Image (cartoon, rainbow, N blue to C red):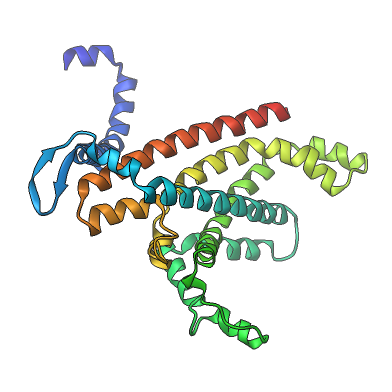
Length: 298
């Protein structure tokens, strides 16, 4: 302790004391579960087998060779990620550009747009499931009102995926809008004033000034949201449970079913760790590609 005190000054010790509670909490609720999960992935860790026999890479091989993992769960997750992030980004950017203008009732509109951020994903998913119910959902009521036949939305793969993506876009579009609005309001005014003097059109200003200067903010938003979208669970589980017939099963649903329904904690942990490696690699590649695009645009 004396050596430690002599190595760190008073300022450094004070800083360490401030971050110690957060670091301890993260270690208990993040690091320890990951270590326990990694340990379980190398054992036959089942509810009915208390021996927890060491099996090495057996579960990893089972997950990698399972057609439902890399043939269904991971592709579904990546498809959901691309659709959700791209649509949320597009809608959020449109809302941010709208809110960046001065108009009557601007504060009211901002408050209304932010309302989805206050709704829990489970509640939003239950709402979407009821809205698209094939028997008494409001969507089919509207379709029948205009003379169209009702649709069994949650009975087919692509319509179910559409409902899941729609729920996620509704939840996360305000998040993009808030961050992009902050980015728009931090942009320098001089280039836009010069463009106004040159009588540049709105599309030209957006394409040549707004979008290039806003790209660093967009890159950060896309990377953070992509990592979060990869581990989506709430919306999928509530709306479809991975169905019909596992056609909308995501990576997180696969790991959950293996660990907590089939009680195979070893295989479920292995699937979770493999998914974690995939998302780390995907996040790094995505960040480098987007960052390179920003540097090229400069």
